[in-house]
Length: 107
Length: 146
Image (cartoon, rainbow over all chains, first blue to last red; front, side, top):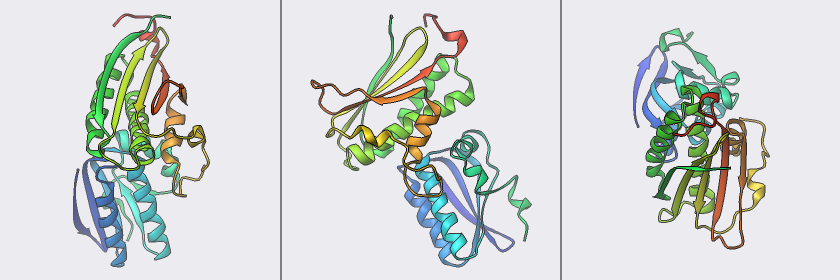
């Protein structure tokens, strides 16, 4: 798993590549919470994410709760395949702001 | 009922082993002609079970052992996960949290949703725990020799 950060409008884009599981979800957590601690809204880009487990989902939920407290936005872009199935199985697809692509975020 | 052995393999209780466990489960599911969607779900359920063994049975100790045995009968594929940790309470398979926004319980929820049954098969002779997860085979694989 690897991740990269970039900017889009006034959002940080956290682009995840590969598989997020117990072995690496703490790295994603640290990066996500750092972005939010800096007062920036974030789009988590799933386009190259092939797998995410419940530890990864719990990280995103923690991020969402932190974002809500700070009145920031956390959105998920390009969810498909196995990661989208996990969002649906956990019903978190009803909780997160899912957007078709990073460019679809509203300012 | 005749059982066919499909896989017996062991790993250490290190989170970095999870990717290889997933690969092995995926290969068996493909062989059993599960759809891609069902395969993804089964891989997730077994990964969640292994994650719980690492976190709660071995308490993040990395030198434990996880043995996965996969067998099939005419109707179902059966995944048995053996560990050598202290006996865990059967209560840990109860869904205590239905709110996905509250921490904890997501892994158990996923296992229960995906599989047809999830239970511990403790025996007095057995050291550790055996978690058994069963899934109905796709129609075209039922009763077939592999």
